[in-house]
Length: 380
Image (cartoon, rainbow, N blue to C red):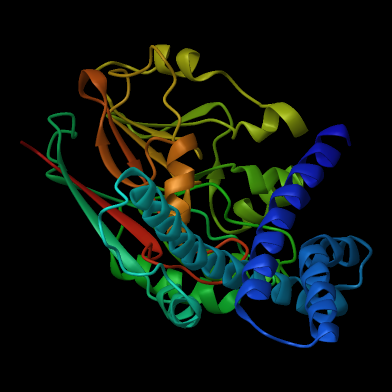
């Protein structure tokens, strides 16, 4: 409870500051009579509290009321972020011009951005908001070609498909599951892996979504690990969903689909705060795997544990969503140096960070399209 209160306090404080800045910018650039400022303040307060109110209603079983509140709150969250980003860019330009005038007063500069720039920036934010909904529906397949002498005798190719961060919920449901299943099936995976956050709060038809995913087959199996949202949703319910979808959930465990291939998976770090991780730690798992094996390591967050590089061939992660909505990726990179894509680590290990196959919160993306990853291993 204490951690939840802390999270709620931090969230409302930061989100409240975004609202305060947006309100100040609008007041500065729009001339209106006194009552409308108060109306705007009330609307901002309502949108600020919408995510909290929506989750509270859902927890009390009032789904019919909670879903529109949550959807409106999440849509507003994206619109507000884009508006603030655009206006902050203008204010940054104003500050820069002011500094230049102070340092070099003899330099003649044009006036800083005014109300016309405010209108253009607002229009750009609106255009990005609309476009982001289309980008979120455009599934991209990122192909990663790798070579390994560890493929088994007589095996010339291994096709591994990774999905991550689908966040099946009241926003992402059966329609998304069908689109993802069709794309994955067309890639003909030998192995299908899911690196966390497949399920989230508010999924209305978990059995229907699980049935769609269960229809995707991979000869070497389907494996998953928990993400932080599996624990927020309830770890037992989440694992039951993943099992019904045909995935074997690895919680501090190793699977060996063939004698030459090992797949390791550990719980997300949220387990340490909410439920307690299961199974063995990573270093113990690695010590049990034959050195000759091709080792794939599934971990939700793109964190690299010291002392493990060189002991696995490829780590597959997600969690960052590639920032999901530009320029939020710049903030994410302050926490996670590896935000998206494939990265070379020390001692021959590799890391691939999936941008996320779905969306969290606002159902849109900007300059970070949803990703299904196809890793193709071949012999050198």
